[in-house]
Length: 202
Image (cartoon, rainbow, N blue to C red):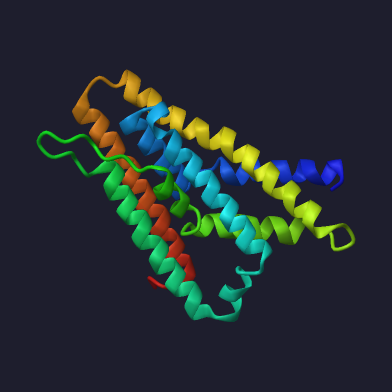
């Protein structure tokens, strides 16, 4: 892939990966509640899940949504259900007497992007805009996924770190709980917007 095209992919990845979305809200909430180090497995899981989405898009799974609209609606309902559950688990669920908080781990992170409409949209857009049929497809695929993976590692880590700063500097447990609940509400709003745009809620 030419250097100038790779640079455009990088700029596109930064704008998409760094912007607020269900995954970034979940990462920040995890960092806020559990700190950066304990959130690393969840972070690595989200990166692995994003790679799975990339493989799915490259294999043509994304075209099924256009061919079978019902599958797209089912996918959006499943994604909304999981992200709502994740919002509850991170921000609202409290540990019982004598129990520690149960944090989302690697496997929970792996599911986030496959059920995240934003991840599918950004990768479908990236492949459609930047893949040149005249050049080797596999090399371009690896380049795009590598750029998105590196960008995700840096920017998603920033969201976790931002949450961990709240964990470190906000001394009030009640205030920290309210911040986590606000992040969960933002996740729900993002999902609602996606559902409305899809025509499911209107």
